[in-house]
Amino acid sequence: MSSSIQIAVVGSGYVGLVAAVCFAEMGHQVICVDNDERKVTALRAGETLIHEEFLPELLGRYRNERIRFMTDLAEATRESDAIFIAVGTPQSETGDADLSYVEAVACEIARSLNKYTVIVEKSTVPVYTNEWIRRAMERNGVPRNLFDVVSNPEFLREGTAVADFLHPDRIVVGADSERAAAILGKIYAPLTEGSYYKTSDAIPGMCNETAVPQLLFTSTKSAEIIKHASNAFLALKISFINAVSNLCEATDANVQQVAHGMGLDSRIGPKFLRPGIGYGGSCFPKDVAAFRSVADQLGVDFSLLTEVEKINANQKVRFVRKVRAALWTLRGKRLGVLGLAFKGETDDIRDSPAIELVEMLMAEGCSIVAFDPAAMERAAQVIPSGPQMTYAKDAYEAAADTDALLILTDWAEFKHLDLARLNSSMRYSILIDGRNMFDPAVMASHNFTYVSVGRPTSY
Ligand code: UGA
Image (cartoon, rainbow, N blue to C red; front, side):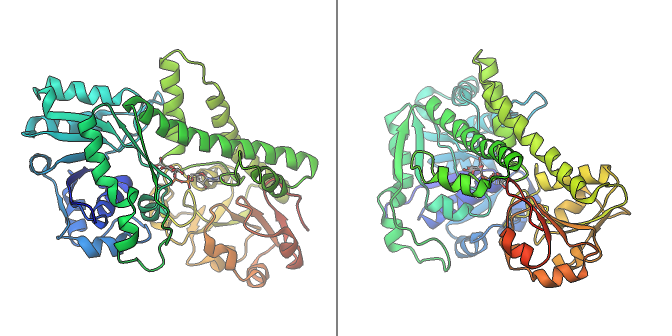
């Protein structure tokens, strides 16, 4: 394995924690810094705090050895050759990314820096952030020859974050200095030179892909834009197929066949063409808004992104209409809901379209019995149990005695539900599937009225 580098990762959220444990897995010495004492204590004890496959195994392997957790950024700065900033960049009221956490971290690093160090932006940030970090360092008295700022955006998805980090399609390094680029090249060498794939102790069940990712060097601004443009493009692809699904509903065509036919064209590709109830999560909604705001501020017309957002919001309104169309009226109806997380295999409910839909249906006077395999604890903090909201212990309890069952999150395990058992306990056999998880013919054979997205309803 290539030589080990001393790395600090600031922020132990999704991106920071996954990056930290994966850098350790790649052979580096890592300090993960968070200003939340409780988080640091939990991480030291081996609790990952987020539901993410393979994270507990990796944390268990390296905790207190290759990876340490602390609150002291000054100490981490003095000990490290590269510092990755992976703190939150939440959406402000105007749609801009709020960069105050990034600025605070940059200023704190500046106060403790005592030798050449590469500062790496890992958080999703708008173009020009790199320059602002550089300015913040200089304003805080750090000589220009003591640091470089590099943009190294992360493309991992929640639910498959560890595998995405260790088996990326590409690694983008935006660096305007050769010295900094060389250090980033060394950090990622175990992946880009392939030694990691040959020598690592495989984690059972993890992707055994050995393809070496491409290392792409760009300017810092290009790297910043690559991240925003990639997320905005994926969101656009989803809104596009959602709009096509609406056209299919209007014509009795089948969006699954259409997406398959489109995706066979290698220029289009089959991924991210699944229609549904709209994209959600902590990234796409925020990043599309931030990218649009960047364009606005630079006087660039990118109103295409406004349309992407409009289609996304409308997809939820259309879903409520579908529920109404299936049930005639909504007030007083009892609905079973399967899934509250923003997508399957995660407990994350940030900007979850499922949560938004539950709120919309409650506002229409429905009562909800919901089940999610991992997200109910978080959901209960946003929508507490009450006369209109009940949390069920499993999918069958959620379906029992309901007027209709709705699928709002694409948890893989929902595919294996016993349909006959579900059906037998419901008041009416109506299943409204916002994620196209089932084959309409199979649903018809189980006597369900089955409403999905962009496909003819089966009875
Ligand atoms: C997304 C990107 O996929 C990552 O590449 C990126 O690194 C990450 O944001 C980030 O910026 O941190 P993530 O938000 O974890 O990852 O989730 P996705 O799997 O991309 O799904 C986002 C939303 O789109 C979900 O609500 C999902 O259900 C929806 N989706 C996805 C669809 O409705 N249709 C699809 O075909 C694909």
